[in-house]
Image (tube, rainbow, N blue to C red; front, side, top):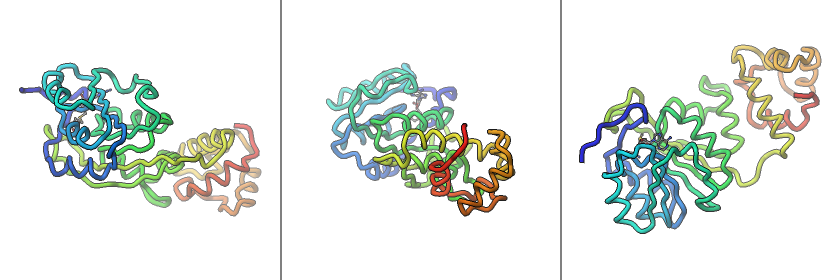
Length: 262
Ligand code: SAM
């Protein structure tokens, strides 16, 4: 069955069975409830259904149905739903969910935020652009470290499972990829009020990467610079520090004692 790949849906299909098996084996989904975003032509789907307790797939492109129907029929633990993943309320699919997906790159960041916000999702193994993976796993003091790196490490433990070169996809995309593993933290590191402050001060700290924390926070909150300098000093941070050097633990400590309105 021939299918013309649709660019608007980020369709870059995988073929290599060894790679697909490796992704599934390293996703630890045995007897788990799995969600797949965008099964495409079903390359990952049957490997997932072989191991998982149940697999629910969301595919936006109805025209893939003739290719996916025989796969769906071959397994009694597989459901394929033709709908936009971003519009789904995932609560209906179980209390403990594990996502495995070669994600459509035009919505990588919204998908990651949806996974983070959905409490039922415990882990995710995602094929994403290598550049985004580098940002998500970046350490302080490196060029790739940004708002997303800090927020991600707050909500989850993240690591790179493997690099995947662009020639592994049909059609070949313009960038290389990587599979990232996201394991959500069971307990939040902060209480609700502290978390709200944390998310806001991290966002504003990285607003202009080349500016110091003091300058970024002065602009965001109109707190006098002298007060901010004293505050940083009291918490053993250099008054001229930039966000790119501030660790997750530093941001957590600051959020716990932040004395200003935001
Ligand atoms: N899993 C297949 C593979 O590895 O070969 C296909 C991966 S392809 C990168 C992304 C898939 O996501 C495509 O099949 C595309 O149609 C689908 N897709 C794109 N946007 C979507 C959305 N909002 N909701 C559900 N599926 C979507």
